[in-house]
Length: 192
Image 1 (cartoon, helix red, strand yellow):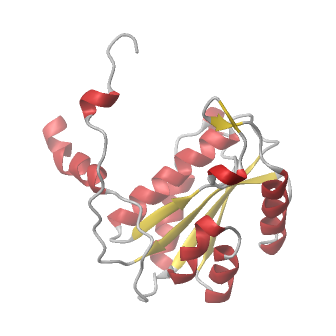
Image 2 (tube, helix red, strand yellow):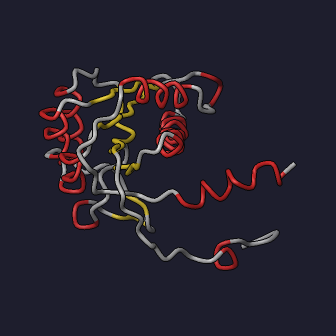
Protein backbone atom coordinates (compact mmCIF):
# COMPACT_ATOMS: atom_id res chain seq x y z
CA UNK A 1 0.00 0.00 0.00
CA UNK A 2 2.85 2.42 0.81
CA UNK A 3 4.05 2.22 -2.81
CA UNK A 4 0.78 3.88 -3.80
CA UNK A 5 1.78 6.91 -1.70
CA UNK A 6 5.51 7.12 -2.53
CA UNK A 7 4.96 10.28 -4.59
CA UNK A 8 3.02 11.85 -1.71
CA UNK A 9 5.74 11.26 0.85
CA UNK A 10 8.29 12.67 -1.57
CA UNK A 11 6.07 15.72 -2.04
CA UNK A 12 5.81 16.24 1.72
CA UNK A 13 9.58 16.07 2.07
CA UNK A 14 9.97 18.94 -0.43
CA UNK A 15 7.77 21.52 1.35
CA UNK A 16 9.83 24.50 2.53
CA UNK A 17 9.11 27.92 3.99
CA UNK A 18 9.26 30.52 1.22
CA UNK A 19 9.41 34.25 1.90
CA UNK A 20 9.78 35.66 -1.64
CA UNK A 21 6.79 35.64 -3.94
CA UNK A 22 6.01 36.94 -7.41
CA UNK A 23 3.02 39.19 -8.10
CA UNK A 24 0.66 36.58 -9.59
CA UNK A 25 -2.63 36.72 -7.63
CA UNK A 26 -4.10 33.62 -6.00
CA UNK A 27 -7.61 32.78 -7.20
CA UNK A 28 -10.39 32.91 -4.63
CA UNK A 29 -11.41 29.35 -5.52
CA UNK A 30 -7.93 28.09 -4.61
CA UNK A 31 -8.02 29.90 -1.26
CA UNK A 32 -11.48 28.48 -0.59
CA UNK A 33 -10.25 24.96 -1.34
CA UNK A 34 -7.25 25.40 0.95
CA UNK A 35 -9.50 26.56 3.81
CA UNK A 36 -11.94 23.76 3.00
CA UNK A 37 -9.10 21.29 3.54
CA UNK A 38 -8.02 23.03 6.77
CA UNK A 39 -11.52 23.01 8.25
CA UNK A 40 -11.50 19.21 7.91
CA UNK A 41 -8.23 18.79 9.85
CA UNK A 42 -8.20 16.42 12.80
CA UNK A 43 -9.08 18.10 16.10
CA UNK A 44 -9.81 17.16 19.70
CA UNK A 45 -13.38 15.97 20.28
CA UNK A 46 -14.40 17.40 16.88
CA UNK A 47 -14.93 20.82 18.48
CA UNK A 48 -13.47 22.61 15.43
CA UNK A 49 -12.54 25.80 17.33
CA UNK A 50 -11.06 27.51 14.29
CA UNK A 51 -11.90 30.46 12.12
CA UNK A 52 -9.93 31.40 9.01
CA UNK A 53 -9.45 34.83 7.49
CA UNK A 54 -8.29 34.82 3.87
CA UNK A 55 -6.61 38.08 2.92
CA UNK A 56 -5.74 39.22 -0.60
CA UNK A 57 -6.11 42.98 -0.12
CA UNK A 58 -2.64 44.56 -0.39
CA UNK A 59 -3.37 47.19 2.30
CA UNK A 60 -4.41 44.46 4.76
CA UNK A 61 -1.35 42.36 3.85
CA UNK A 62 0.82 45.40 4.56
CA UNK A 63 -0.87 45.83 7.96
CA UNK A 64 -0.16 42.18 8.73
CA UNK A 65 3.44 42.64 7.60
CA UNK A 66 3.81 45.50 10.07
CA UNK A 67 2.38 43.42 12.91
CA UNK A 68 5.81 42.04 13.78
CA UNK A 69 9.31 42.10 12.30
CA UNK A 70 9.17 38.34 11.58
CA UNK A 71 6.16 38.96 9.34
CA UNK A 72 7.61 41.75 7.17
CA UNK A 73 7.70 39.63 4.00
CA UNK A 74 3.89 39.29 4.08
CA UNK A 75 3.73 42.58 2.19
CA UNK A 76 5.10 40.77 -0.86
CA UNK A 77 2.75 37.79 -0.60
CA UNK A 78 -0.26 37.45 -2.88
CA UNK A 79 -2.42 36.21 -0.04
CA UNK A 80 -2.45 35.12 3.58
CA UNK A 81 -4.64 32.90 5.65
CA UNK A 82 -4.82 33.83 9.30
CA UNK A 83 -5.90 31.09 11.69
CA UNK A 84 -7.66 31.89 14.96
CA UNK A 85 -9.07 29.46 17.51
CA UNK A 86 -11.57 30.00 20.28
CA UNK A 87 -9.56 29.71 23.52
CA UNK A 88 -12.74 29.08 25.50
CA UNK A 89 -14.00 26.21 23.32
CA UNK A 90 -11.30 23.69 24.19
CA UNK A 91 -8.05 23.41 26.09
CA UNK A 92 -6.59 21.97 22.87
CA UNK A 93 -7.20 25.07 20.74
CA UNK A 94 -3.48 25.43 19.98
CA UNK A 95 -3.01 21.83 18.86
CA UNK A 96 -6.19 21.99 16.78
CA UNK A 97 -5.14 25.24 15.13
CA UNK A 98 -1.68 23.83 14.38
CA UNK A 99 -3.22 20.79 12.70
CA UNK A 100 -5.31 23.13 10.54
CA UNK A 101 -2.25 25.26 9.76
CA UNK A 102 -0.19 22.25 8.66
CA UNK A 103 -3.08 21.24 6.42
CA UNK A 104 -3.03 24.74 4.89
CA UNK A 105 0.67 24.35 4.06
CA UNK A 106 0.09 20.98 2.40
CA UNK A 107 -3.02 22.07 0.46
CA UNK A 108 -1.30 25.26 -0.71
CA UNK A 109 1.64 23.31 -2.06
CA UNK A 110 -0.71 20.87 -3.80
CA UNK A 111 -2.14 23.92 -5.61
CA UNK A 112 1.36 24.96 -6.70
CA UNK A 113 1.63 27.75 -4.13
CA UNK A 114 4.52 28.37 -1.80
CA UNK A 115 3.92 29.23 1.82
CA UNK A 116 5.43 30.27 5.12
CA UNK A 117 3.95 29.69 8.57
CA UNK A 118 4.37 32.71 10.81
CA UNK A 119 4.03 32.03 14.54
CA UNK A 120 1.06 33.02 16.61
CA UNK A 121 -0.45 31.81 19.89
CA UNK A 122 2.70 31.61 22.00
CA UNK A 123 4.28 34.72 20.53
CA UNK A 124 6.26 35.51 17.43
CA UNK A 125 9.54 33.72 17.80
CA UNK A 126 12.21 36.31 18.35
CA UNK A 127 14.50 35.22 21.16
CA UNK A 128 15.19 38.77 22.26
CA UNK A 129 11.45 39.36 22.72
CA UNK A 130 10.46 36.22 24.61
CA UNK A 131 11.54 34.90 28.00
CA UNK A 132 12.51 31.26 27.64
CA UNK A 133 12.06 28.53 30.27
CA UNK A 134 13.83 25.27 29.51
CA UNK A 135 13.70 25.94 25.77
CA UNK A 136 10.08 27.10 25.49
CA UNK A 137 8.44 30.48 26.02
CA UNK A 138 7.55 30.90 29.71
CA UNK A 139 4.45 32.89 28.89
CA UNK A 140 3.34 35.35 26.25
CA UNK A 141 5.18 38.61 26.73
CA UNK A 142 3.14 41.77 27.47
CA UNK A 143 4.11 43.32 24.11
CA UNK A 144 2.94 40.20 22.31
CA UNK A 145 -0.38 40.22 24.17
CA UNK A 146 -0.86 43.85 23.17
CA UNK A 147 0.10 43.11 19.55
CA UNK A 148 -2.24 40.10 19.41
CA UNK A 149 -5.14 42.17 20.74
CA UNK A 150 -4.37 44.86 18.16
CA UNK A 151 -4.36 42.26 15.39
CA UNK A 152 -7.71 40.91 16.61
CA UNK A 153 -9.10 44.46 16.53
CA UNK A 154 -7.62 45.14 13.08
CA UNK A 155 -9.31 42.03 11.67
CA UNK A 156 -12.51 42.39 13.78
CA UNK A 157 -11.85 39.14 15.64
CA UNK A 158 -13.39 38.68 19.13
CA UNK A 159 -10.75 38.69 21.87
CA UNK A 160 -11.62 35.15 23.02
CA UNK A 161 -9.98 33.95 19.78
CA UNK A 162 -6.23 33.36 19.86
CA UNK A 163 -4.02 33.94 16.86
CA UNK A 164 -2.61 30.53 15.95
CA UNK A 165 -0.78 31.39 12.75
CA UNK A 166 -0.48 33.65 9.77
CA UNK A 167 0.37 31.78 6.57
CA UNK A 168 1.88 33.75 3.70
CA UNK A 169 0.89 32.38 0.29
CA UNK A 170 1.92 33.04 -3.26
CA UNK A 171 3.65 31.74 -6.33
CA UNK A 172 7.42 31.59 -6.32
CA UNK A 173 10.27 30.04 -8.26
CA UNK A 174 12.41 29.92 -5.14
CA UNK A 175 13.69 26.44 -4.23
CA UNK A 176 15.96 26.80 -1.24
CA UNK A 177 18.32 24.01 -0.29
CA UNK A 178 17.95 23.72 3.46
CA UNK A 179 20.10 21.41 5.51
CA UNK A 180 17.89 19.19 7.63
CA UNK A 181 18.90 16.85 10.42
CA UNK A 182 19.14 13.25 9.28
CA UNK A 183 16.55 10.64 10.19
CA UNK A 184 19.19 8.85 12.26
CA UNK A 185 19.71 12.03 14.29
CA UNK A 186 16.05 12.44 15.22
CA UNK A 187 14.51 8.95 15.51
CA UNK A 188 14.78 6.99 18.74
CA UNK A 189 13.47 3.49 19.30
CA UNK A 190 11.74 2.48 22.54
CA UNK A 191 13.37 5.36 24.49
CA UNK A 192 15.27 8.60 23.96
